[in-house]
Length: 172
Image 1 (cartoon, rainbow, N blue to C red):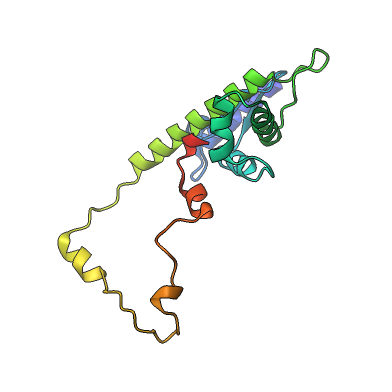
Image 2 (image 1 turned 30 degrees about the vertical axis):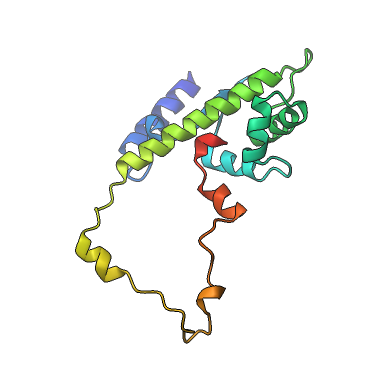
């Protein structure tokens, strides 16, 4: 009874207090860990997945699709650590390999939905021809005051870190 009243009061307080998010507005990913339902911050969980010491999305994702057992183990390990779920056992519950991969697929779909939602709410003004020509400066091969030449500047070819940070969320 008291838990119900406390949750009702907390929900009402969240709706009338400026700067707080009501439950439907919060972007929390919810999932079943094999024994109970849990909730996580999707961005923090995304970072945990990327921080895994062996998992590389562009390498292991396609290998899992091809049925590579070692790649599947690495992906499952990354997902289990990020979501704090255990491997299934009859005694302790947890998630099977298939359920772990499904959790990851659901999570990627959720992130893609967040990304689309954010892109729809952010509208940038379209550049006009006059603003484009005014903001573009010609590149010269002369040495600038800083002593950096064009050959010292960053190449147009993306590096591995550039491609990892710019890849779509759903491709993980």
